[in-house]
Amino acid sequence: MTNDNKQRTEKHEEKLKDEKDKTAESTEEKIEEMPLLDEPIKVKDYVYLSLLSLEAKAWAYLDFVAHPETQKHKKDINEAKLAIDAMDVLFKTVEQHLSPEQKKDLQTRLTNLRLNFAKK
Image 1 (cartoon, rainbow, N blue to C red):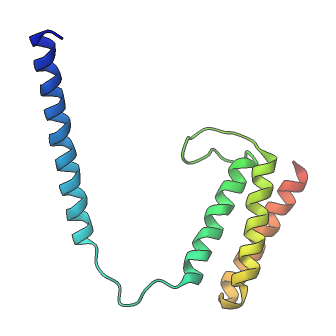
Image 2: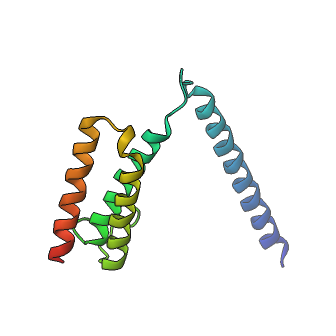
């Protein structure tokens, strides 16, 4: 490696290190700025959010919307079925802990997915 290339490489590595340090400092600042909650988040709330995430994946795999992580359409009936089945199991597990509004909302979401799955 020539001296010129070696110097460029060293400068590039130094620049990357500086950027990494700035990113780490920024992340630490954001964590410190986050307010603490008075109470821990309930498991039922995490499950509810997981159900909504699975619903989004099911719609994407049914090819009604683009996948959020790629912004591309990709139909996969098996993945859609897995997401819907997983939603069903999670819903049955957490159902007794949900409010009547949440139950009705999730039942409606599951019904809509199942009907659209049957059409595909």
